[in-house]
Image 1 (tube, protein in one colour):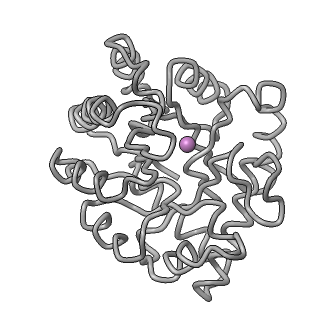
Image 2 (tube, protein in one colour; image 1 turned 90 degrees about the horizontal axis):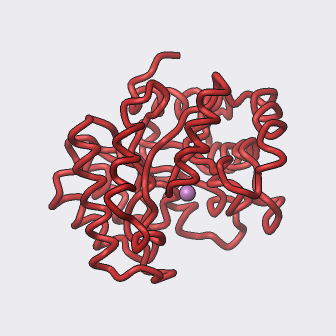
Length: 256
Ligand code: NI
């Protein structure tokens, strides 16, 4: 049993193939696949996929890169679906200083609204943070996000900050970078993160792990990420699958 906590089977790259990718994923043991919404189109597509496939769940959120396009309608859309039986979290939301497509204050406003919705509806947050770890941490702290907690998705922060986010009631989710040959920090993060705070994801179609790095990522390539972490932590692969699966089940408050 594998729980992939972050996929984008809702983007156009999978328009022709999502059905096959989901079927192949189920064959490879992925019994839970979270499809993360991040704007109007992807929220609606995530809901559609979650309604179509038993194994698929959705999230509703607005990405910081798209923050300038967020309107009142966007938050209404998030609220419309937030209590949908297959919606597990709010996000992805957060701060992205890498692409810098939306001014910081706009990103923070949009992030704040989603934290408020998560708290109002008691849903965990899925947080995207790129080149913004310190600000993200302080923002989550100030806005009281620890009340609901959530996931630091594709964690790319320092080894030192892992305990800060865990202290805020967040789990650490690792993706493709942990498999990259020269990725010193992600491998060190994998080594030190407590097993009960660890999740796995692909963020597909982006960030394909070794050995398919550079190609289109698929939801079932999460197995490469699990294999690498099992090696780093010197733990049995099936045990790691079971633990990360149960961590996600517990966080989202859903049954087996
Ligand atoms: Ni994502």
